[in-house]
Image 1 (tube, rainbow, N blue to C red):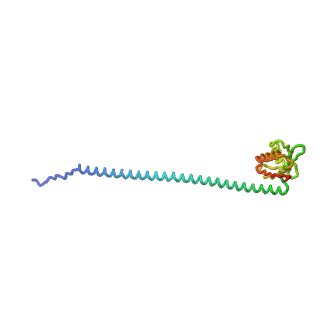
Image 2 (cartoon, rainbow, N blue to C red; image 1 turned 180 degrees about the vertical axis):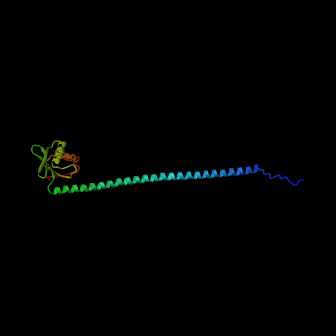
Image 3 (cartoon, helix red, strand yellow; image 1 turned 30 degrees about the vertical axis):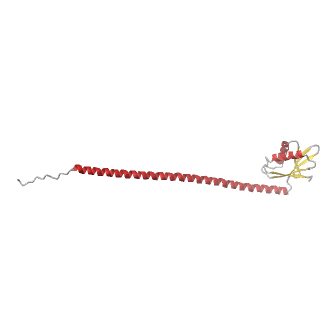
Length: 198
């Protein structure tokens, strides 16, 4: 023998080792995929929850906005009522002060040949009308009120004076109906009825 020994080397069986490495890689990839799916599902869940929260918040904001608008409308209505009450009170006070100074519209039913309605403001004659139809009497009263410088929004105090022993019930009713129709134009037209026969 010549002093050299031949080395055979190490023979490693790689097939089995490659199988183990492939299985481990497959297992790692599957674990990563499962983790990714879980993260995606959790993210989807959070997005859905956030969207639901947004929808609920928008609904609450809409309800709050509607409530504020309703409160605004109610406040405006109350303010308008307060202004109206103040202006009505001022108009009533002005009418009462005018009444104290003798400013009063009077409707007098008199009979000469036939029934006539005379319209006065204090002692100033504003007009007259034959007691024949409700429409003619109402027109005469409206014309007289305009002549007196009274506007449709003014508070107007009026007294209808008649002698119940002389005046026909039909005529009193006709004048009364005319006064009621004048109230359709002059909303604050208040008329008292005075029967001088009592």
